[in-house]
Amino acid sequence: MVDVVKKKGVKMTAMQQVAYRAHTNIALIKYWGKRNRQLFLPMTSSLSLTLDAFYTETRVSIEPNLTQDCFILNDQVQADDETQKISHFINLFRQQSAIQDPVLIESTNHVPTAAGLASSASAFSALGLCLNDLLGLNLDTKTLSTYVRQGSGSATRSLFGGFVLWHAGQGSNTTSSYSEQIDPADWDIHMLVIAINKGSKAISSRQGMEHTVQTSPFYQLWPQEVDQDLQKMLGAIKARDFDQIGQIAEHNAMKMHATMLAAQPSFTYFQPDTVRAIQLVQGLRQEGVSCYLTMDAGPNVKVLCQSPSIPILQQRLSQYFRPDQLILAHPGPGPKKLEEI
Image (cartoon, rainbow, N blue to C red; front, side, top):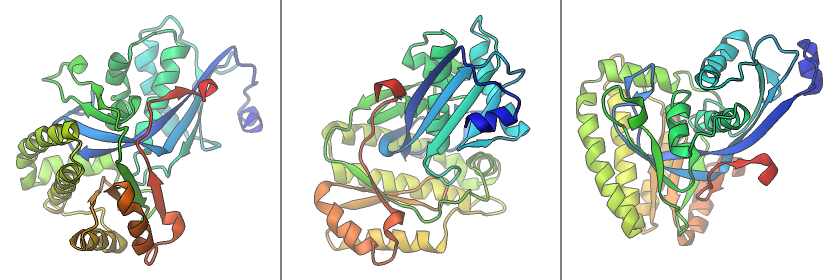
């Protein structure tokens, strides 16, 4: 890493630095569509489960020899356009701070980037936490969630562990759209991720979301469907009713993907093995195995399950998918400073 930065003409003599780990989250009630693209204000509220298996580690340093921000992702110095996007996000924090220095961002995704596994959620959550500390803002977590949302919408949920509710808020009031933990998920609920394709998506979530909102005739029904699903989900989590949670999550995910199929022109994130995985999970459920699926904007299938179902799920799915494609995740914690881990 030092050599990479030296090639850019940067002397590694950091005056200050801080590092955080943040985990990804998978939405059970989906976020799909913005009412304000600049402020990342969502059309609807959403609800997620933070996972322990996927996370991002980010270190931010104030470097005296930098003349502009430098962004290194997975040991690769990023191009100017990617760095500019990150600088735009950093400026949200710099505007509130007396510290205006350029920074060095070193980030490692322990999750495939842009593959529908929520790498942007953990990445912007970790970066926001670093900036909050490094620039001395001392924002509370609720307020910080309104900042990191403007890097990636789902990042607002990765500031918390367990089940997390992201409030849509009202109008253009940016502070009314925030996240909070509603349940620590410290009970028997898990997620088996079927990694169909770990490569980058041809259509980004942002592109797919905007196209769906603008062209899908089904989308006008989406907000009221989400509101109904969310109210049911809150009750199911409170009751710790796993089957009800799974049924609501699966139906909500399929409705989201239906809005994409109805877009003009139509598009889908499904791949042949996605359909195979869906059929396998639903077939196991018909055999009496308690398991339910959800999907985000990508081909990968996530299976909600409880401990008794895990062995049969792994055994059956391993007949069609490689061991490295089957990743068992448990409810994840909130972010931590790396020095605390």
